[in-house]
Image (cartoon, rainbow over all chains, first blue to last red):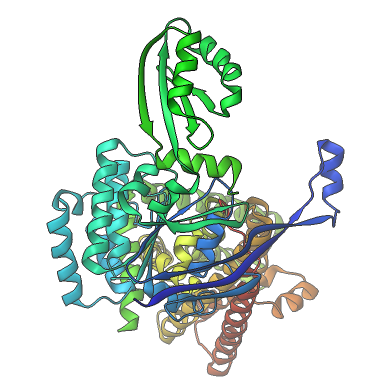
Length: 335
Length: 267
């Protein structure tokens, strides 16, 4: 397998004006030269092989988009090196653009007023796709999704799901080596989400396209990614197999309890009572969840303790989900 | 083959502007309204001056000039500044930057379709009506040929000025004030609102060193010149060509330098 993306120690700094509060402060800002340096991305390295699907995760505002913008060539890194398919993206942006496709879940690259097929034709000319490859990819699309009814529909009349689907197809149209998907399933219903995932999976398989997937939906990660990269505050936290992730924090399990009485009240009590087990207690409308690290406490012990103090009406035991692990990483970092 | 991608964008632009039929009607109506204002304003100017010829132009000269200037404006106005500013604010600019084309040409050709429709639906009808209504006051000879060349260069100069103004939005992240300022400066100094012949001597001279009059004044002067003197026309076209080249290079450099500063919203 060849490396398609090589990133070595890249950093990106932004100069931001220190804003002051209030009317007087804002007036001062007009003449202020008081800048602070924000390290949006701080010394990140990774290499990605052709055909991989990599989940690129991190809390909001931690430099994910900045990294992607550097990989696509929109931003120039302050320091470090990037090679995308042998090109330096910010130097050969137009050349690099020919090798990559992009989908931003919140924006569309399609021509708003025109039927989808016109957008496709336009992209065909812009990316100089030959008739043969265009026809063959359209054939592939027709075998994967029911595209016919969409083709003659103006994009502005599409539902969000249809539009996202179309945007993904548009991004793969010129057979790019790499496709960046930035929150492709945001705002979609469950069935549309699974259709989108199936489509991405199929396109990756069929075309051996490298996919970099940014998302906050762990369902996407579980369904698509074998490898995940997590960054927080601009720094790399984790880069490994998804299987490795769960063992990473020791063996966690979630015990779900439904006590009698007011669930919120009970959970507050539990928090104090379970303090010595160092278990994390959270609550939703139906269940109290107790996250237990089995290296520190046995699940049965915790359950016994709870039964002694509360009247438990129902319980179930869950293996830790990717979502919980990621949440833990976001909140506590990697030790 | 490469040229095909540009015309593909033009085609899409034409298709798009046909999607908004009402906008087209409003554009034509607005055009008429403005012309009415121009007519009464200059009528008042001429009747209060007491003579038929002001600054070497008769009332009908001035009117023809301004009507055609308005038509030219409606055809050439590309709202590039708005477009760039809006794209920066919304972050959509990232998607445009990721096309395998230079942003400046991508944006221009994306708009060229609208330009073509505007030419057919505002400039041409106005021009024909003026020709018929004034019964031959507009000469129809070789000047038309020079005029077309001149207009093409005017479009390029106008676009380059717009593009540079739009680039400023990368720094300010606001559009409104900059756009209004640009519009006022261009419309005044280009001779689109008041014929350059009406300017005081000093200002006329200053304007001569600026690119703006190449946008409206030059093509209109060429068009309305009955007996085009070759050297004169050649000089005017030469000046335009100079500004074309200078502004294209300048706007390209300015954009390159500015793009490094770009932060892009939502990042």
